[in-house]
Each structure stands twice: as structure tokens, then as C-alpha cells.
Length: 618
Ligand SMILES: *[C@@H]1O[C@H](CO)[C@@H](O)[C@H](O)[C@H]1NC(C)=O
Ligand SMILES: *[C@@H]1O[C@H](CO)[C@@H](O)[C@H](O)[C@H]1NC(C)=O
Ligand SMILES: *[C@@H]1O[C@H](CO)[C@@H](O)[C@H](O)[C@H]1NC(C)=O
Ligand SMILES: *[C@@H]1O[C@H](CO)[C@@H](O)[C@H](O)[C@H]1NC(C)=O
Image (cartoon, rainbow, N blue to C red; front, side, top):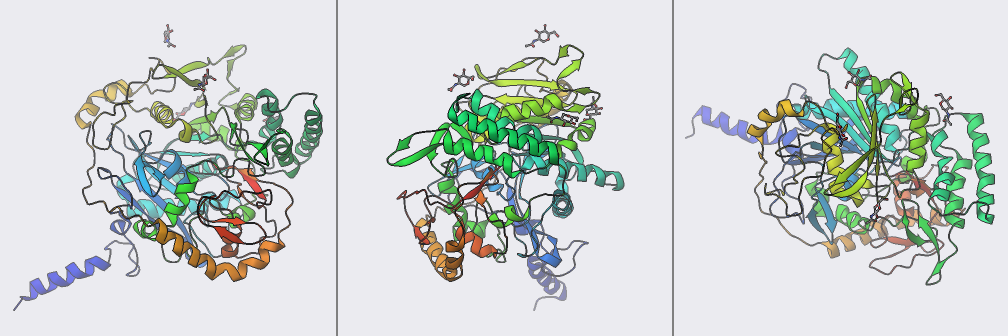
């Protein structure tokens, strides 16, 4: 009895469940925005009030290259719409670090998501991307890992084109690219690619600036700073036996740098870091040799872990991101065959950037067009603040060198006070801002989330009077711990335009997005454990041989994104590498030699832990 029209309507309704009517529609499986919508996340608090999307975007069909993103909409609307893209380091470390341990809306504990009051999505949309392909939830055919920075940037541009195709409402946002550590290489390359794209494209992207925390940007000044920092922080005494040994290695490193110029990676210089970790502490704890945590020298760990088991949240994040219901909720493609891993050895061992110039060479040009902030947690060794300061001192941009604004005149070092306490200091000249963050590790927002938000808001020009700096709970209520940071009225970090925008802003304030929906609290840790064990059993056969074949040459690791097994010949399949890694101290620690996982909390860390390159992770 239905009329023809209603019949057609019914068909349309049904088919729209499967099809996305967009001009770029090529075939039915093409995804549209709603396919990325996160309905709910296991363990999420009940009062979550913002929209999130996540999933894969294919950037190269020939190599099955798919980048994974997680997008979080802002809680409050400011006068200007902003999108902050966040990238972690490595190369090969997942930006889920940023999402779940640093600047994202949640922290994870025991399968539950706890709201992060310092989340950067207060006045900005956040876009976390697992970059380059193969990192985190991203994937690619195992013969197609990237090697150089320009090809990484090219794929990232493809990703952004597709992302804005899916979510055109963000294309006119101010774009800020932020990240840490080895992302200090990625970010300037992506920024350069965007400026080049803008020159030839009618729809410009409004790239406003960059924020790089403990960045690996200029190895030729940063490598020698390992020893400077070790002396400065008192990890090693000058003229001691260890000091002399390090001085000798430093000389070798300097000679190398002299000879080979602006390499992004140099083995003889890496060796300085290795030696500091191996020799600086003569201490045992419960029969284990101790070493400093290379990401936070206030902490010590069993040698040769030295920070690999840090931060402690990793023990919750890894199992959480491997829960089948989480994987499903985040729309991870079934093509992503292996479980989430913080850092990918396969990506890291391919991405050596041997023919790429270091990103320091890109900064002066970028600074002509945009603001750049370099911030440093003062307790980090691997990409330490002394190296960053030396780099700035020697960099020439916008007509002068370093923070010397005119001969003999230096940009003032201003105190940064947050809620009445010293949070650090900052210096600004000619579009470059440097911030030293007190009491902070390599992963600044991990240690001081509220201060990191304050830093972001000032830098990107969030209006403070009336609404900035009073962190809001997702419900829109003022958080009890909130209070205005004390911002110097003439803070160079804040934006002059603020006042003008004040009125416009008032109208739009407190407009939070609400997302209703039941929150399903299904604790599946045990199920995930069984699943993980099953997956491991499936793969175990292929892994065993290689596990025993690796030579344990001591530790050699990366800048918190070089936290990967040191496997130079990359002729392993990705799945095998996955098995070789120690991904989480609790969930699937592999005891070397036996290939045995201990599920549960027994911390049988041993000296025979797999060797790693240090990762420039954050
Ligand atoms: C700083 O960047 C802006 C664009 O944000 C640009 O207009 C200005 O010329 C730059 N400043 C200098 C000193 O180059
Ligand atoms: C300092 O900068 C100059 C010019 O950019 C460069 O040639 C030199 O290698 C740099 N020195 C260090 C120690 O980085
Ligand atoms: C933080 O750092 C500052 C400056 O280095 C220091 O004065 C202060 O005692 C530190 N606070 C804590 C809690 O460690
Ligand atoms: C702000 O600038 C004024 C003059 O421009 C100066 O007197 C004052 O000390 C500055 N305040 C701070 C906190 O830097």
C-alpha cells in the first residue's frame, strides 16, 4: 500500500545509512563524517560534553597507507576558532600519548577514563594524528614505511586535504601545530608543506603558528648539550673518571658533527647519552643497577630501562587501547592487524631521515610568517633545555640572531606565574617565544597539565578576561581548583587583539557541546588479557627465532620517540617486531630469551631487557 514516493523515501533512508553523498564519492565504501563519530568510549565519565571523531584516512592506496586520527571538539567557543594538531615524536611514537597522557581530554586508570582538567580542548579543537604511517593505530604495507621528512609531510598534506573534505567546518580554523620531541622535525616540515600548498591553492589554510615541546630540532647544538646538562644537573662531576670518559666521547661527537654537518642522528653522539645513563649512577636497588630516567632526571629506574617504563600511565594506556571494545569505539579499521603500541620499531628503523636536512634550517623562513613557541621541561635530559637555549642563541631569524634584539639589548626574560606560583619563564623576540617550564619532564603536559593549558591559551591568544584561565568542567561549571593565573598585563605571550574581541566573545561564552548518551562501563581487562594472550599465541611461532637472534648490544635508544628496539636491518615483518617490543610493563612484558609474557604486575625487569634506541617521544 505504500505510495511510490514513500517507497522511494524508504529506500533513500536505508541507502543513506550506507552511502555518503559527497561529490568525491567514488564508491560506496567511502566514509563520511558520521562514520567517524565516537558514540561513547568504554570507561568514559558520564558527563562528557564534547564531540569526538576518530578513524583512518587513506593517504596512499598503492601502499595501503592509512593515518589514524582522533579529533576532539572544543568545550567552549572563543572569538576565534582554532584547531591544534598534536603530534608525538619517535620517529614512530603514537600521538595517543598526547591524547591520553598529555594534552587530551582524558587520562586512563584501570580501564577508566578520568577527565583531564588541563586538556587543551578548552578553547581549541584538537586533532591527534598517528604520524607517520605505521605509527600507533596508523598502518601501511610493511615494505612502504617512510624514510625521509619531505615524504612524511607530503602524506600529511594529503591527510589534511581529506580530513577537511570530511569536516569542512574546521577548514577555516586557525591552525596551530603542536607536539614534542622528534615531532620537532615533523612539525616544521609539515608547516613548510602547508605554506607551499597555500601558495597554489585557492582555499588557504590559516596556519597561525607552531608549538614544540622539548623538540629535537638541531642535533648539532643539542647533542653536545647532553654533557652540559649532565654537569649542570649534577648527574656527573667534572673531572671525575666518568666525566673524563664523557669528555672524550664528547670530543669524538664534536669531530663527527664538524665532519658531517647537520645530521639528524649521529651514533657517536648518541653514545654520550648511553654513557651518561650507564655510568652516572653507581647505585643498586633490590639487586638492580639504577640509572637516571632520561626523560625526567628526578627519577631513577632499573638499568637499562632508564625511562622506558615511564610514564606510569603507560601501564594503563596500552591495555586500554588494546581492549576490543575501545578499538571498535575508535573505529580502528580491521586492516590494522596488530594491537596498539606506543612506539613502532618498524617505523623508527626505517625513518632515519638520512637525506633530510634538520628542521632548524626551516625555522627562520617559517618565522617570517608565523609565531613559533619552543618550550622545555627543565628536568628532561634527552631533548634538554640547554640544547634548545643554545640552538636559539645561535639561530638567525627575522634580521637578528638569538634573543639579542639589537646590539647589547636582549629580550627580557619574564617570569611566568601560575596561580601565584612560579611556573617558569619566557622570552620573546621577532615571532619566536621560548618557555622554560619548571619541575617538568620531557612530557610537559604530563607533569603540569594546568600550566601547559595556561601556556597554550596565552600563546594562541585566548581571551583571558572574563573567561580564559578559569578551567571549566565539561558540565560548564567552574572547576573548584580553578583560579586565574597571574598574567602580567603586558605578557608578550598574550595577544593584543584580545580586548577588541572581548564583546563578541561574551555573547558566545559557555557554549559547550553536549553529548548525551549512556555510558557503558564494561570492564574488560580480563577479556582483553585473554584476547591479548590469544593474539600472542597466534604470532609466537614466527617471533621466537628472531627474538633469540637479536644481539643485545646494550642500550641504544631514541628521544622518547626513539624508544624502539635497535633493529638496524629492518627485514622483519611488522608483526614480528610487535612481538619483540616491550610495550607495557604490566600487560605483556616479554622476558628476554624465553619470549614469555607475564600478565599481571610482577615486575621481573631484568638487565636482559631488549635493547632500544632512545626515543624522542614527546
Ligand atoms: C611575524 O609573523 C607575522 C604573521 O603572523 C608576520 O606578519 C610578521 O611580519 C612576522 N614578524 C616578523 C618580525 O617577521
Ligand atoms: C651556528 O650558526 C651558524 C650559522 O647558521 C652555523 O654555521 C653554525 O654551525 C652554528 N653553530 C652551532 C654550534 O650550531
Ligand atoms: C619548581 O621549580 C622551582 C624553580 O626551579 C623551584 O623553586 C621549586 O621549588 C620547584 N617546586 C617543586 C614543587 O619542586
Ligand atoms: C608592563 O609594561 C609597563 C610599561 O609599559 C611597565 O611599567 C610594567 O612594569 C610592565 N609590567 C610587567 C609585569 O612586565
